[in-house]
Structures are given as structure tokens and as C-alpha cells.
Image (cartoon, rainbow, N blue to C red; front, side, top):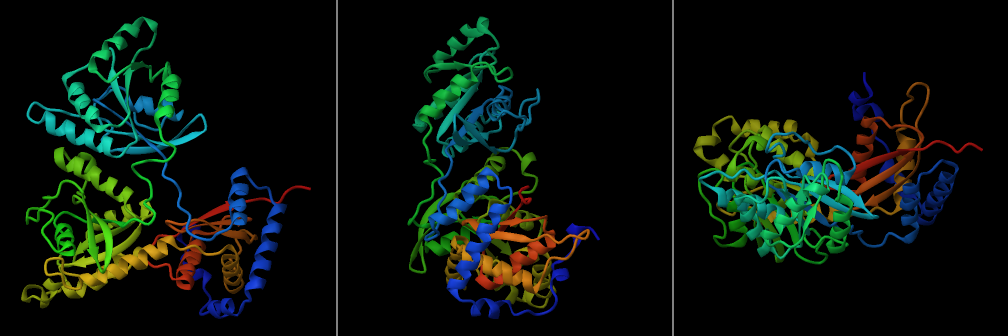
Length: 511
């Protein structure tokens, strides 16, 4: 059996006394034991970022750690002007797909970049594909996405072709945005082509910056100027500490997302139509539910094969991803009158990948009591589907609601609060190491090739989602890591949040 295939059961030898043992530990003893483990870690070869992490423990753990959002630079422009080549040049590696075919980049892709000790996010956007019938609509939709979600825009133009009518459409939108815009005159491979860049002054965006993304010419100077305008912390993605918690409502088209928002708001705020896909854009609404203010984002339904979809649906799917990026907790709406689909699972996995808190809302529950479904096999199959298809998110709070009638809508608020509390939860380092020590004593990691990997020390690196780092003498089996995660959930009631466990395998220092 491969290590990846080993289940959690291999590491469990029946019931244990973990909870009782932890409850019996003296707090002072816990701290002393943790400090001793920390000192013992000095006997191992640690890396620079290990020291940063461990130093953070000494600084104290009171309160929640809010990591500032990195500033965002969006690279926009027509197809085939060299946006992806510029991304690769800035990153210093070949990440973005580059091909001499317009429109290769279809999805908005984010990368982490660094220049002169400044870290920032860089967004490579798909090129616009205007057509004779809907040039304004398609250009505006793509440009809005790029502008909304960034702090600075790099507008790339092929200087050898010159400004086109599409470029001019975009310029008008960029001017209205108020965002800093850098006009990048690409494909200026040598000094002889400089006059081509100068011609772009006519666009009215200020000085054109001549570069060759392929050869790197002029890119360093451009980045120096961008850094002068780029804020230290993103103005578009920063955490609103103390503001209304941000909730993304996700789900397949026509599962009842807009109906849920309308019923929560107590009024008709979003167009509801039986036609699937009525909602195109996320609609931010401050809504009072359960005596608290929440910022709800109703999103366009995610469709299958997003990268092949056209027009408004393509842009709507991009906006849905953007809404999830800005949210803290996602409510995934599932239609109980229909079987759980691959699309439903894909949307849930999208939430898990984003690290957001999660609540599952089973909508149209009232339909299960109608004659059409009451005597059918739907009710019988639903629980089996939940047990099988949603086993990987069994920790997510479930609410059974009817968005149309408002039935059990009041249960949504406690579920959201539970998920967010878990998402924000921090376990003190002493308690976490006591948990690890007692767990390993009850359920040691099996021998692998005659060796048994040990956990030397553990700490919670961040919250949102809770992320733990284990310093070990060898790789822990995936099944054992899942076992640790499950027991962590049970002991500290992490309900409604993903948990991340990272390993740092370290060797003993040679004396």
C-alpha cells in the first residue's frame, strides 16, 4: 500500500484518553514543556524563515493576526500585445503561458512578485476580444474587472502596431477609474524603434514607457516607477477589521442565490428569474440579519468549463472568483431537489483552495415535502449523497433552508458566526505542543523503513484559515497528517474552516 493510500484508521488503535489527559495538565507545566521543546529545536539546522516564525512566538499571541493584503498590479491590453511575456519578465521565470496566438490567456491569473524588496501581486488578464456587434460591452466588462481589483494598472500596447480603436475604448475607462495607469509601449527592441513609442502620447495617458518584454529592455525602469505609485498595503483587498463580515454566496446557476439575498434583506434587491444565469455581476449589499450587519455578495452562477465559455458568462465567472477573494466566508447554496453534481463539488473545492470559511446551505428544502418529491427516491438519496460526495467537508455547518419562503433562514447567522470564529481561532503554542505530545503518546506514527519520524515542535503560524507548522525529523504520512487535523478539530472545535498543516523536515546539526 502506498503511503498516500493509508487511511487515518491505521493510526488509531481504538478510543483514547486524549481529552482527559489534556484536561489534567497544569498550565505552568504545559508552558515549561513547550519552552523545553523550543530550546531542543536549536540542535537542528534551521532556515532563515524558521527563525522568523519562531521569533513570532516570543513576541506574543494575543489577538488575531491580520496579514496585510499585498498591493495588486493588473496587466491589461488587447490580445497578443505581450502581456504574458511581461509577466514572465517581471517574475524572472516562465510562469504565464506565452503563445503567438491571440487570446491564449483566458482566465485572470495571479502571481506573487518582488522588486527592490517590495512584494506585490501581479494579475495577468485575458486579452479583449471585441467584435463588430458588441465591442463596447466586451471591452468594458473585461476592463472593469481589471480596474476594480487592482491598485495600479499596466496598460500594454503593441508599439509597432500603434494605438487601435480598441485601445482607445479602454483608455476612456482607465481615465474614469482614477487608478494610476502606466502606459507600456511593448516590442521596442532597440533604440531605432523609440519613435514608435513616442507616438502613443496621443492616447492621453501620459508618458509611454518603452519596453521589450521578450528581451527585458526598459522593464527595470518601468518597475521602479510603478513602485513609486504602488501602496504598501492594497487599498482594494485590505481586511476591514471591525467592519461587517464579508459573505460570498456561491452556487450553480439557478440554485437560489439571489432569492436568498432578497429574503435576507427583506426586499427585492436582486433580479430573480427562473432563467438560469440571470445574475451577471456580484452585488455588494450591507444587510442586517440576526441583529448584525453583514456584507453579502451575490455572485453569478459558476458554469462548467469556464475557460471555454463566451461573452457575459466568461466575465461573470471571473467576477465570481473575485468575490470569493474578497470574502471571508462562503455560503455554498445547493439545490436539494437536484442530485449533488460535479459542479457543486468544484465550487466547494474552489472555496477550500481559497482558504475561506465555509457554510453549506441546502436550499429548496420545502420542495422535499411536496407530493412531487415526497414519495420519490430523492429524500432517500440526498443523505447518501451528502455522506459520500461531501465527506471531505463534513466539518462545514449545514443549514436546511427555503430562500423563497424564508424558512429556517435565521439558522444561517449562527452557522456563519461559528465558521468565522473557527476561521479566526488561534491555539497558544504551549497548548498546541501539549496536544501533539499527548496525541503522539496515544497514537505514535508507524515505523517506515525502520525509522519513525518525530514531531519536534509545533506552532500556529497564522489564522484565516488556521495554519499550523510542524517541525519534524522526517515526512509524516498524509494519513497521519489527516488524523492530526481531525483530532485538532475535535479537541478545539474547528467547525466551518479549512485547516492547513505544513511540515518542515529538519536534520540534526553536525557537531
